[in-house]
Image (cartoon, rainbow, N blue to C red; front, side):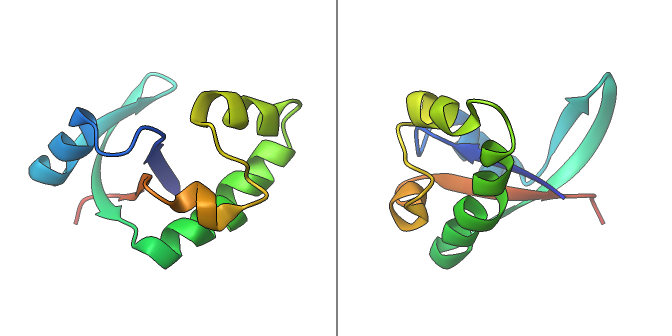
Length: 93
């Protein structure tokens, strides 16, 4: 599963992704078409608590990096989810 989130809220790429209803991402040189599903408020909290939090804790300085770049404390997923757009990316179909 793949997700993207916008630390800066409603920015142009978020509006473009919504309008287009799809995108092409490149991972390790491989281009892949995806269809986004925007997460609702409770799903965003779960993303920060159950997905991003554990990943960041598993990387040296990961939580500090997220705090510096995004300005949120992953120990408070409700606050972290507030005002941030999160999309789950799916294979088109």
